[in-house]
Image (cartoon, rainbow, N blue to C red; front, side, top):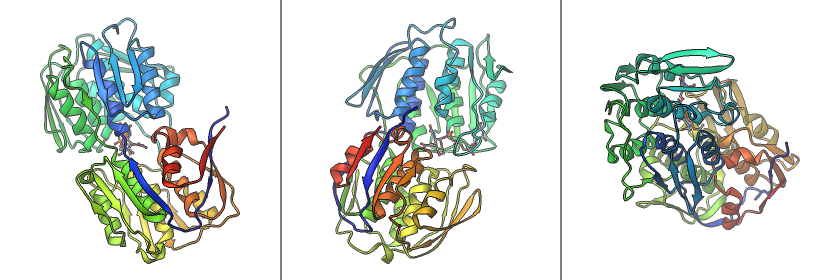
Length: 438
Ligand code: EPU
């Protein structure tokens, strides 16, 4: 299969970018809101939806299950699941689901509404094993039967799901969201403990609550849900789901801007969701002006070598997000000092480091969960071909090419498209020489 690539020119360490970048809605909130559409008795409207490839994949999965979708236009989409039925709408397409881990979130609403769901066992992926035991254990506690046949999980709960008490032994974003969704239609009360507290979970929970779900505590470690006993939620058309700004996209542009921009305004973001990265960059010497929904880098002309390094240990929210680990490592290669970067969430998220080392970065891989960087290092111009390994590592590689001196081809741009809408257009507007080729 031919995949797109970015042809781009590095800035050779210069800080010349300037302009404004508008942050889109969080794909990791919008994807989950799409899954919640199954819980509703009529059409739902979602706003500020980023038009990324993952959103298109989730649309395709829902359409195959019988949902009617008005595709994203001007960041608005509508999903109507009224014609979905227990007979036709419970087998998630294995091929489509294989392309996107977030599809597993759909199993909760489908099981809760139709009493059954089948889906493929997710394989290992580029950032780690990504098991689904927390989902399966939760469903069993809610009274469902789980079997695995020919690589397909079959989950059945012919009498509906029942409320339960569940402690997450590992803090899981998708696990928290999925069991929360399933519990909204279950019989009785569910208490979820040791939950993830990501803002995207709060975004979805608040929307469901505004549509009649009884959910308390989202954003804290204990979420209590009183289920409706099978009665579907009712969407008030005047109250659409409004996706919160993407804190990972904003953080990615901020790290890129710190290295490459003279003047950059990051607009329509939510700085209060970005405290970990803002504080680390502040300690490094990067000066930002933080407004209610903007972050500005003004007169950012200090040499990158004048910035200081910091250590990172990725953590669940509000800690330093694993999704910014790769862009942060690129930052650390350009500033002065040694750093330890510990990846505590996923066990295989350093594949891109090999590419950075080839560019000239001084990075030592201590083990699959830790690297050490020493900066600053000027990136060489001898390497022309670079590869995106996943969404965030892909952004990091674009960032690395931009810092470097020379012309680069960043392969696998389709992986970057999964999480960043029109990245090349937005970078072009800031002064980057970049174009998409097939
Ligand atoms: N885990 C289990 N068993 C489970 C579920 C998860 O052991 O049943 C483990 C995972 O293997 C991992 C840890 O729990 O070690 C945390 O994973 P989590 O479930 O929180 O991750 P996720 O829900 O699959 C979401 C985001 C990821 C983001 C992580 C962590 C979506 C669609 N994806 O994944 O985003 O990295 O939370 O914040 O919301 C991205 O956007 O590029 C991305 C990878």
